[in-house]
Image 1 (cartoon, rainbow, N blue to C red):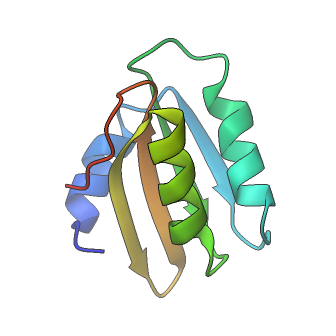
Image 2 (image 1 turned 30 degrees about the horizontal axis):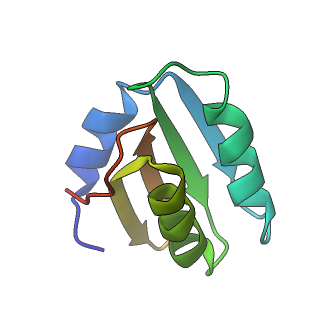
Length: 94
């Protein structure tokens, strides 16, 4: 994962919803993200904070399959941080 903390913070400020799934194991980070993004209009963004080591793999696959963009994915000593854009039809990292 190669995005910077500043880019995550900038993207976080544009999110319509935030999910804190730190301390939760698979599949809860994915399920909570799905629940948060479902009612939002296309183009809306959701942030996720998670500590589950499988989060990157699971959420990347889900975003691609569902047509959402993964705008940001990063890891530090506190866990993982993601930002998704609903119905973007491509998965991209910044």
